Amino acid sequence: MNILDKIVEHKKEEVESQKSKVAIEELKDAQLFSRKTLSLRQFLLDENKTGIIAEFKRKSPSKGIINVDAGVLKITNAYSTFGASGLSVLTDENFFGGSKEDLIKARVNNTPILRKDFMIDAYQFYEAKSIGADVILLIAACLTPTQVKEFAALSKELDLEVLLEIHNEDELEHICDDVDFVGVNNRNLKTFDVDINTSLQLFPHIPKAKLAIAESGFSNTDTIVTLKEAGFKGFLIGENFMKQPDPTIAFADFVTELKAKQHAH
Ligand SMILES: O=C(O)c1ccccc1NCC(=O)[C@H](O)[C@H](O)COP(=O)(O)O
Image (cartoon, rainbow, N blue to C red; front, side):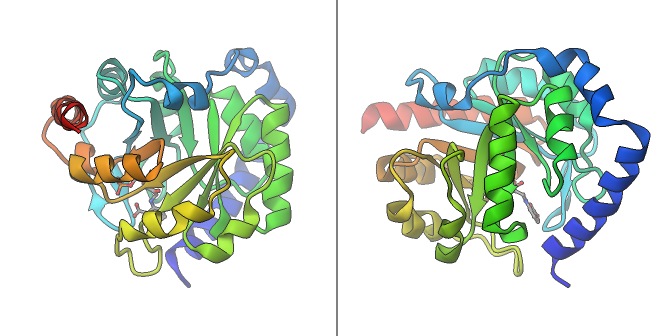
C-alpha cells in the first residue's frame, strides 16, 4: 500500500468518527462558518505580494519530524506580514502533526488560508468552512473526476476556492469548471523524490483560466524566478522554512532575496 492509500484509509475512519461527534448542522452554527472568505486568486494576482503560499507543517511522511516546537500564531503572522499571498495549514494530525485548532489560530491573519488535508467526504468541506478556511485542496490521485466535480461544486456553494493537485498528465482530466487553481506537486508520492521539471512539463497543459501553482521541494529563490517566468502564479513552500531554527527569519530572508532577484530581471 502506498502512503497516499494509507493516509486515505486512515482519513475515512477519522471522518466517520468525527461525524458521530459533531453533526453538519452544528458545523453550520459555528461563528466562522458564516464569515466572508478571502480570495486566494486576488492575493496571487496582487503584484505587491510574493506568490508564496507558506505552509505551516510540523512533520511529514517524507521527512519525519520537521519542527515540533513551532508556534502557529507567531509563524503565520510573520508569513503574512512579510508578503505571503496565502497560508497553508495542515489539519491532518496523524501523518502531519497538524490540527483544526492550528487553522483556527492562524485565522487571525487577513490572508487567505488553504486547509491542507486529504478531502474525501462532503463532511470535511463543511468542517473546513466552520474553522475559517478560504481554500480547500482536492488531490487528483485520491479522487475520481466525478468526485472532483461534486466536491468542487460543493466548495463553490460554501464560498470556498478550490486547488486541484495533480502529479502527471493523466490527472489533467480531473480539471473542471469549479476548480480555481491547478497545483502541480513536484513530489512523487511513491518515491518522495522531488523534481521541479514536473511543474515545467505540465504547465503548458494547464488551461489559461486556472491559476497555476507549483508545489513542494523549493529551497532557492532562483527556482521561483524561473517558474514565475514560465507562468506560475503561486508557490507552495513548507519544509524549507519550517526546518529552520526560526522559520519567520528564514521566510523574511527568502522574500528579500526573491524581490532583489525579480528587481534585477
Ligand atoms: O510532504 C510529504 O511528505 C507528503 C507525503 C504524502 C502526501 C503529501 C505530502 N506533502 C503534502 C504537500 O503537498 C507539501 O506539504 C507541500 O507541497 C509543501 O511541500 P514542501 O515545501 O516540500 O514541504
